Amino acid sequence: MDTTHPQVLPEGSPLVRFSGVTKCYGPLTVLDKLDLDIAQNEMVSIIGPSGSGKTTVLRVLMTLEKINDGVIYVDGEPLTHMPKAGGLTFATEKYLHERRSKIGMVFQQFNLFPHMTALQNCVEAPMQVLGLSREDAEERALNLLELVGMGDKKDQHPTRLSGGQQQRVAIARALAMRPKVMLLDEVTSALDPEVIGEVLNVIRSLNSEHNLTMIMVTHQMGFAREISDRVCFFYEGKIAEQGSPEQLFGDPQNERTKQFLHAVLDAN
Amino acid sequence: MEWRWEFAWEILPRMLWATGNTLLAAGVGYTIAVVLGLLLMLGQRTPYRLINMPVRELVEFVRSTPLLVQLFFVFFVAPQFGIKLSAWTAGMLTIGLHFGTYLSEVYRGALEGVPKSQWEACRALNFTTGYTYRRVILPQAFPIALPGMGNYLVGIFKDTPLLATIGVAELMHTANALGAETYRYLEPYTMVGFIFLIISLPTALGLRRLEAAVARAQGNTRH
Image 1 (cartoon, rainbow over the protein chains, first blue to last red):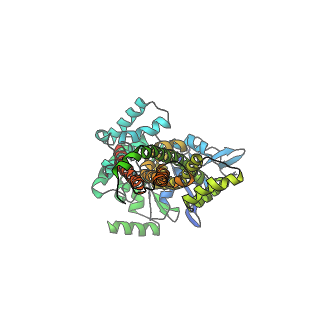
Image 2 (tube, rainbow over the protein chains, first blue to last red):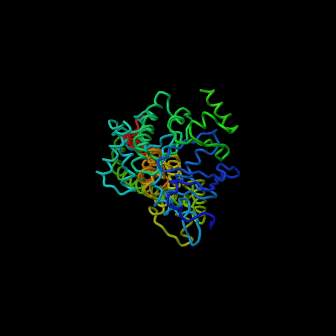
Image 3 (cartoon, rainbow over the protein chains, first blue to last red):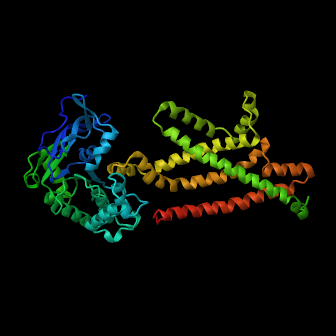
């Protein structure tokens, strides 16, 4: 029983709040008492060396992994925990199922369902989880496939699509659930250089025209600098430094940030 | 001894009748094995140690002992403990159990062959576990399991002659009987081998076509 964290957050709280979140794999601590707030409509980029815990931030928020300590709040209420008596206990699967649809995730390896067409990939969850009729789900899916420029490929199976095309379908599939926050986990890392641009363009339009709340783990420093409202530099499971892209890339204060930026910018 | 066509012709009706029994035995045995294999696999995957431990031990035990010994045990030894089964029942249950353990391993491998990332995609889309199995995992596991399932179908068919040893009137048993009656063994045993060949070969070919068709239906163009 956890009584140090509140059962609900006050009105006007951020859309997502990590409060003292710790995640360990055996003896290894990947997130170390992390505090992180994400405001409505904010675009936050997470950068940092590998092993710094940046992907884990997304995975615990998506409830793919259980956290060891702390609480994650979404939309003012606890996500990883549920209220019980005077405090909080770990959420049951039923409690998670009722809330998980608020979060959408796009994976590095796309993870499309290979035995379904692009359209079927986008229709399944809205029908099964949100209870939409087939007509409504298909209309929604078609609009989104158009939005990501994949309308003409709706009947193709993923094996017939390029990596960039698959990733755009994966974005449409996540959007079809109308999540309140989108998590993008290194979505261009598995792509050939020539198709990275088409995926970045989709993310650009989601940010500028649709004002989605997004958390993006990325190695694309130029893109993070261009698009983010805020950039967080992770080091050893903590936020070593965060700020506007201008501050963090233009005038980093932390030694680790400087070293990291030197290393990646020199490599480019 | 030389081949006599008129003798072969004369025994053909009995051989064909016995072929029907062989096919029946293979079909029933395989059906039991397919279902039992599924139950054994599920038993091994349950998180309850009280269930998964004994099931795992049973599977290992059955897989590590010969089918012939198991047949003799069920048919000749079990009656001494009060379990009396007919030759057919004993034979079908034993073959079903023996190949069921093999098939449970085929299923297990097929399920593990579906990438873990597919589970994560389903969880991110908030599918229930049941729906994840039904719509995403099993449809992808099936093509992986198909070659192994096909192999054991042919395998069961080719192992049915063992049933002759406990008195099931299948092909081998009939050939033995014919040999004992007429003292001619060349024709009956040659025909047994030939009948197995002309059934096994097209079956194996058909299974390969089925695998390709399933892969095509799922949009997998690598086949």
